[in-house]
Length: 85
Image (cartoon, rainbow, N blue to C red):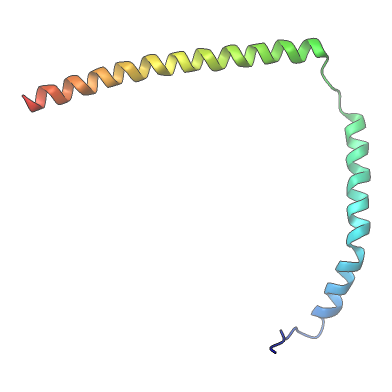
């Protein structure tokens, strides 16, 4: 069976990193909790208002692009019909 050859210092470095991994994960979640406590969360009223704005904007852009699409479709069809006659 083949074994991977590692340079002399690599195996010790891997073991050190592997042994400190749980500590790093624990520190990450502790810092995450601290940062989440610092976050200023929007009120329910702000969330609803911005959600309504986003939904209206999505429908407005959809309508705009539908109109532009129809215009370009009409122009391209007229162009093709002009050259195929």
